Length: 308
Image (cartoon, rainbow, N blue to C red; front, side, top):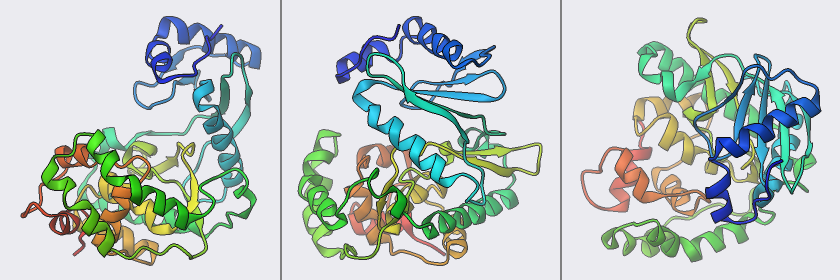
C-alpha cells in the first residue's frame, strides 16, 4: 500500500502526503493487531510517526532510510529500563512492504518539552537541566559494545577527518556567508579534538524536541525518544545538541547540565564539533540563537557554549 521511496524527490512527494501515508499506516496497524483509534500523525519530525490509540506509537521508515529503523529498534531494546528517564518500549519492529520498515513502541507520558518550555517555571527549568545532565551521564556510562556492529561510524578519528575535510563545502551548501566560511579552516585546525578515547553510546540529537515532560506532575521529565541517529563516539559530541537546543546559549542552564553530568567541555571544542556534526547547520543556528559580540568563531563559541 505504501509506494517505495528510494530518492529525496520521492521522499518529498510521498512522505508528507497523508492521502498516501495514512492508509498505509492504518493497514499496518491492522496487520499488527492493534487498535489505532484514533490514528494521529505527529506534526513534527523527519519521519512519519503516528500515535496509534492511547498506548502505541508507530514510526515508519522508507527504503531510503530503512537502516534507521533497524538502529532505532536495536538501541531502544538495549536501553530498556536502564536510564533515569523512560525510553519507549519496543513492542514490535520489522519490514513492512516496498522497502519500508516500522517500529511499534510504547507511547511516552507527557508532551514535547520544546512546546511546553515557555510555560515551565524557572526553578523547574533548572531542575530539568540537571536531570538532562544526569540522563546523559547514565547513557554514556553504558557499555556500547553490544551495539558496535549496528552503529557507526566505526573509527572516530576517521569520521572526524572526513567531516573536517568537507566542513567548508557542507556549510557553504547550507548558505553560510563567506566571512564565516573563511574562518572555518583555521578555527578547526586550532581546536584539538580527542580521537582515540573509548567511544560511548551517543544520542546525537539530545534536544528539547526529543524530551517529554508532564506539566501535571511538577514538570517532571517523562521520556527521551528518537534514537535513530545514535552513534558510538566521543562524549562531547552529544553536547552540541545540548548547547544548541537544551540550554539554547544560556550559560546558567549549560552550567547545570555540566555539573550534573560530572564533566564539562570547552566552548571551542563544542563549536568545532558543531561544524563537524552530521547535521550541523551553522546558518540556521545563526538565525535562531543569540548573535556573538564579534563576528568571529571564537566569540560565537563563547556565546553559545560558555558557562557561568
